[in-house]
Length: 165
Image (cartoon, rainbow, N blue to C red; front, side, top):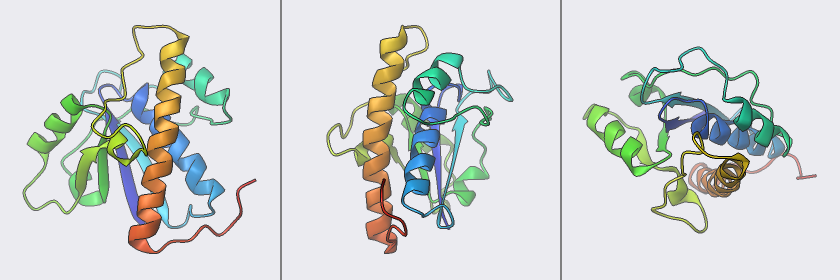
């Protein structure tokens, strides 16, 4: 089982959107028994809360349901439990690298480094903006998730077991 953790600040906008989009792609590929996704925040402001309603609304408009997700904070144990820990921006990446135990086998990287275009780019925080920001986050998460799943399939030799519809 390949385990992926998406990380943003409060775990209510960007990282749950990435988790939901990635889970949908994994399910579409028939790989849900081989790839697991979760999300967390670097800060515990919203622990136990569902994703922001604007994130849920934007995701729902593209057929992705985030309603069952709940915010949590990244823990040291995550560095042993997950194969990939992916930061939504460079600030999160720096925090994760500072937290990461030297013995951790996890790949800690910027999420959009997996996108076909956008390597080194941050997923912008839509929290203080309008609906367009949440749509942009979805666009970026779709690109990053597609690239990530392709990379995992190549590295682990996984093949989609159902055709895309």
